[in-house]
Amino acid sequence: MNIHEHQAKELLSSYGVTVPLGAVAFTPAEAGAAAASIMEKTGGHMVIIKAQIHAGGRGKGSFREHPDAGLAGVNVVASGQTSLMGERMTELAEKMLGSTLVTVQTGPSGKVVNRVLLEAAVDIAQELYLAIQLDRRIARPVLLASTEGGVEIEQVAAESPEKLHTEVIDPAVGIRPFQLRRLAGRLGLTGKAASSYVDLARRLVAAAGELDTELLEINPLVINASGEALALDAKLSFEDNALYRHPEIAGLRDESEEEPAETVARKAGLNYVKLDGRIGCMVNGAGLAMATMDTVEHYGGSPANFLDVGGDTDEERVATGFRIITADPNVRGIFVNIFGGIVHCDVIAKGVLAATEQVGLSVPLVVRLEGTNVELGRRIIAESGLGVISATNMAEGARRIVELCR
Image (tube, rainbow, N blue to C red; front, side, top):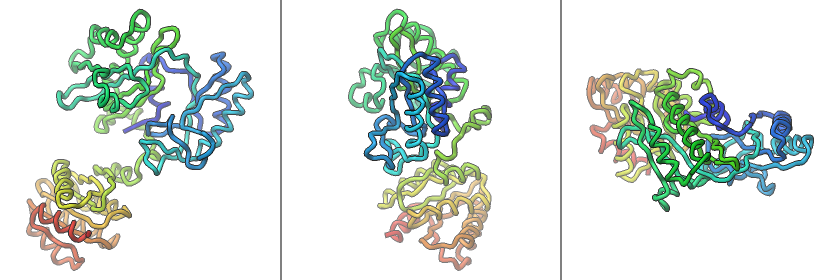
């Protein structure tokens, strides 16, 4: 689960992480008032307005509705008067709110901006990168740091890997002080900047561990003119399976930022991810789902989704999954591949047929069943009279659905 930048900064502030003075706004009037208030409190004359969407690249993005306005997802406004600052920010917010921001991460469809973050400008002396994420190769969290703040970290890893530094975090004892000091040294930090960086990094590691984050990314982490480290941007992504421990975080979910079908699937207890292909896949078990997608690709097809109905599914959940797949206008065929262990094949067959009768079947459907009650399941499908095609194994089913979609 992802949250907005302003929410991430509010959470990190509770751990003592320094962030710029800011306020979120949902209307143009709120944006103008917030900008004027920030200007008064800081005595500065520059305020930043940032679109709040779950995607990066906002500073280089553009609004579809305002192609010639020179308006990006992040804009700096300067004014010598509080009233003029409020007026200018109100005008900008009117254009940004409700408009579609297109960035390299949103794709051409873009995302609609429903809220903006107003922040005091920071006198930046140095930009850095810091992230805490799980390294699945060693099954431990790692702290990633670089001097290349504000740049896509994938680009740094590919073009300048020597500028990317890592420290492994021991799950039992956490990050050690000497590791953070060593990291600060590698980044070329000294004096107050080094000590401030070490303190900030320590707090971020603590927050990542306690909040069960999949990713905590600060890009950029800046050192200001007085040598203080602060989080100029913040991205937090949480492990869904740990959200039951954090109901306050689960309440921050913004469903308008998520794929609608994925939201429906999550509420039904299904694991669903929308893809760009043409063949809908319904499978039980993540491993079998991945193998099914690979097999479809092998025979020249392209999966339209990842859908794992789980090992303890029932007819209703299967029917919900089927409805989600058929609602995708890109789907040209459906492949149901089930290995019945805990779940019985006849239950899957009944769920598929029930959903087919409810929503209709306008594309080819191939079903491969194996395992518990397989003969009963196959018989149910064969006697349905709905034109469902049975396959005896995964390879046959994948090949058949690809042929039918052609």
